Each structure stands twice: as C-alpha cells, then as structure tokens.
Length: 507
Image (tube, rainbow, N blue to C red; front, side, top):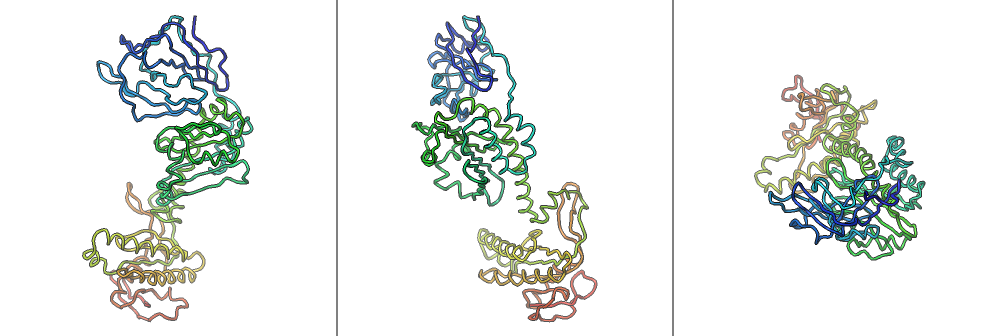
C-alpha cells in the first residue's frame, strides 16, 4: 500500500495528509527522526515532503540560520543545521513557525532538506509522487510565445496584470521593484493598477533606504532577504504587518502577497500582487504566479540590464557616446569624422589647492568643478566626453550648422566661468577650437576609449593653457568668434606642438 494524496489538482494545489504508523528518516545508518505522527505534504509538480514533530527528530539541531525561503501559501521557512558525529550538515531542516492559513497543519513541524535523508521508511509502503503533469496553461503559453516581444517593463507589467485577470485571478494591483546600478537612482518601481489608465513608474533616489515608508514596508522586508510577505487583509497576521496594509484594505483589497523576484546574480527584487476577491487568493492563483516567477524575473532582468548598461555608459562616457557604444560601435577604429567645437576646461591653481586643502576638501572642490562644468555643458547642448585629471573635455557636434555649435560652446564657456565664481577656491580656464575631428574608439585590444582626436582637440587644450598667460578666462580660435563683440583680439599666437600660429580671441 502506498501513501498518495486524495485529489491533487492538476493546476496547483497543496494537500497535507497523515502518514499512518511509524515513519523513520535515515541518513546512511544514522536515524534522523522516528515518529507515529508524521505528515506528508503533496504539492503540484514537486516531490512529496514529510514533516516530523520537533520532538521526534532525534539528531541534535543547531540554531536558526540566516537562510529563509518563501512560499506564498505556506509562509517563510527558517532553517537549522543538524549535528552529526562527523560534523554539522548546514541548513538540513526547515520549519514554518508562522504558517499561512492554507498550511497551518505543518506549522512548527520539521522537514529535511532534499538529499539530507537518504531514506524515508513507512509501515504502509513508499510515499509516491502523483503522476507528473507539465506546467501549462494560457499564462505560461503567453510567457513563452508573446511576452518576449513586449518592448518595455511598463508594458510587461500591464500585460501580466491583464493576463492574470483573464485567468480568473482577482488581481487589482501589481508592483514590481527592480534595484538598479544607477549612480543616482536606487531602482525602478512599476505599479499597475486596475483602475489606472497606465502603469506608474517611480525612480526613487538612494535616500529611499532611509525613508520611514520604505523601512517599514514589504519591499524592504523582501529585498533584505527576510522572506516574502503574505497577508489576508481581513485578518491579523502580526509577523508581517505593515502600514501599507491599512491603505490597501481601505481601497477594498482582501489579500496581499510580496515575493522575491531573484535575478541571476543574486540580487533580490520584489513582485507584489494585491487582490479583492472575498476569499482572497487561492492556492491555485498563487501557484500560477509562483511557478512562473523565475521566467517573469528574467524578462525584468533583461530590461534592467539594458537600462543599467545605458545609464552606466551615459555616466562614464556621456549620453551621445553611450548610445553609440550601446548601438554597436565597440571595435577599435569604429567612429566618424565630424565637424565640432571642442571645449577644454581645467581647474586653475589645482596643484597649489591640492597642497593647501585637505584631501576631503580638495575632492569636494574637484567634484564641484566637474559638476558645475558638466551641468552647463549639457544645458548648452554639448556633451562631456571625459574628465582628464582636473580638466573637462567636451564636444559640441556641428551637424550642418557650424555657427550654432560654436555659439553653444562659447555660451558654455561663459556660463561655466560665471558659475564657478560662486565658489571661493574654484576658478576655471577654457580653451575652444573648431574643426574636423575623429570621434570614435581608440586604444588597445583590451582597453578602449571613446574620444575625439584631431587638430581642433589639440588646439583647444593648448588654448586652455594660453589663457593663464594672457589673463583671459576663455581663449578661442577665430572660427568660434561668431557674433561675439566682447572678445579681445589676441592676434596670432604660437602654441606648443602646433605647427603654425593660431589667430585667437580672449574674454
């Protein structure tokens, strides 16, 4: 006679039954547990799990470990080591100390992690797994066939909500929190609401981690690896009670689940679903989402990887350059010849300042200089290509309007010098030249740099130095002059490593 469930659903279900007679768990010749009150949990498409009362586990147990796992209809499992003569076996047993209502029978019982017990012996014969049924259905079919063509995370979130409702899941709200690698943005939060016309997207700063609304929220709980959260909003479940539950209850919600959305690198993101069915979510409802969670996670991971790549490239090489690299210009020699105004700006007296100021103060000053210059350049339509020591290299592509590019560069120089004057130690020098440059990849096989190379770039750097000798904050070539009327004509100036003198102006 075998131990089998009575009627395990082919969609998703959990059934816990008593195992009659004596049940023993062994690891080799070592008896781990011996009980007449064991139970077995049958869960769709998973191996049966035998649960023992704690007093019937014979081997010594270690303290509760840091490992936690979450099931939306069982709860958060906590783990312990078992202590054997040849040493401890880590995370060998788990228990649900506060099981959810669907699994209340196994609350406080102990189960052995797969592979820990070699044999589970019963008086009534083997515990057999029900006939295997492949995971299938409209949601899985949609994930396999259609979801991969969805272009944005917002559209994916909306489509997921609509698809779940099509299958009878009374979901009214979905929130997806994805943590990022952006220097300013902690992550992206996509929120689909049944009554809203479109998905809301939030991009909180890193200050969110100290905000009370986040600190006492399911998002932090799950992100910190503390397990998932399930709360029937009509009941008092003290372990996972958060202020947001009251808000959701006031909106008519009856059930809430927040579960880990793990990325392949181990980062823990969060998917939460809220429903309004009078009886809350069924095990079949949650099993449908739970079985698909890793597939859903991979779609969001692809979206976030691209966003991360774009934001990191924009941060380190600039917006235009980042787009070109992301677009495929990644081989040495890739690039174009363009007409552009090149601006070179450096921090005056930097050597003296570094000696006089503390390291912290000097770095703060340098960051202020870079931030000010970059902000003005971007506002004027240019792009910062790189920081070189205490200097900034920026480019203003001409396209078909060289005069406009020069005017933007000159406006950027004026704006930068004016803005820097607000800081007592911060004084800049700017050189601008216009001409044809190569805009692309140079470097070694292992290390490439996207930059501009050419006569105009060399001249701009030399003019930046020249201003220190002429007493002008900004020095530029004749091509850049345009309609400027407040510039001093400096005539032909010989520049270091530039073959012919260059006609320059200063202001």
